[in-house]
Image 1 (cartoon, one colour):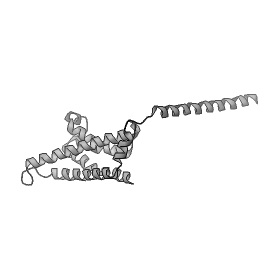
Image 2 (cartoon, helix red, strand yellow):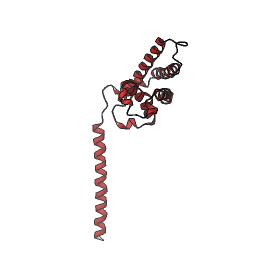
Image 3 (cartoon, helix red, strand yellow):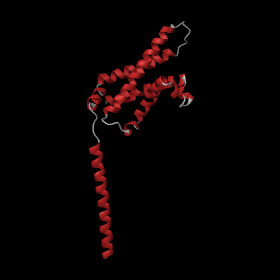
Image 4 (cartoon, one colour):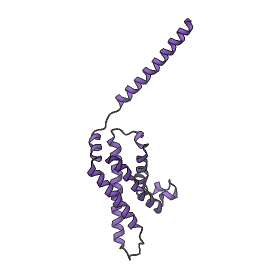
Length: 173
């Protein structure tokens, strides 16, 4: 009976010790987590309805420009100069989306990997950050499969930006 009592006390002590360890780890996580400077302001700005509408319009404009950019470049429909202008506008939009991606990540208050595992963030990585990186660093394109790094792969990824509207519409709710 006394051995049963000791085992019971040992189990209670063990559970109590584990609970205390978990409590201390949670307290450590809470004390080590802090919001980055101005992260709340950035997050609030990016959730503003007018900003969300702006990004929706950029997604639609980007998709339109990509579609127009696939037209034959024979000078009959548009001049070479027009194609260069479209390409420059598209590159600017991609840069804006890339800055917005990192601003949203910063806006959550911590640079954690947890944010990068969200489904809509993964979509952003593939349709915003990856095309930007592949366009700006052709050497990096060699590390990815041909279907992603080719011109047609980049066009497909760019057109998939339409999926970003889902995240934007979720934010508006």
